[in-house]
Length: 260
Image 1 (tube, one colour):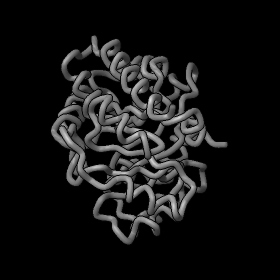
Image 2: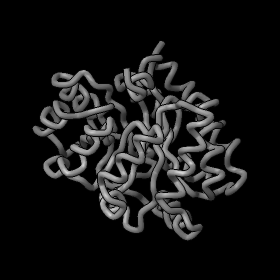
Image 3: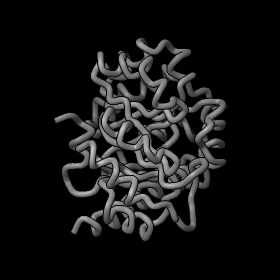
């Protein structure tokens, strides 16, 4: 069983997202250890990009801070190497096609896989254009994680049939960021996907508190939360680790209740 599927084996998975290099790569590394200790099942690591089209203002600003601090793809790879000496928690990258393309697609994928990254999410790569990235991922054993959105409609089954790792279900139209309410019929999206694929379905975009997490975890296999954690990194800077860990613990407890 691969690392990603293991993340979904002990009840509902809680998946935090953080931006690498915000406020520093040293703090990002400490966040990974602390969030794992607090109950995270899989961690999404954002590689900052200058024009992240799927991101709301919170993650957009985090990326700007990380880039201004000198964060590069190679320095992130060095951090992953250090993390893998201490932790085997499943980890996936979330970034943009241009980051991978400019590094060299095969070079990027080979390096990420060799360091123990388990998958990659590229929100700006349409399903119909994924082959250029997916084929190297298959070659080196990196899951190319697909996304389905409320607008996917008839394409959901098609996307799910070819998905790998887990299926990322986008809960809200628009960019990432906290929402006071999530009104999308996510349950129907998941039902359609599971008619075709046996992969876990994790829901992200907009989830920011334990009540939302528990409600969605009642029918999803996992919950993804980014902006609420990135806000803590912005608010507390180098002192953000205990605050992020406490939040992850609270959210994991809420998700666990949905598994009972």
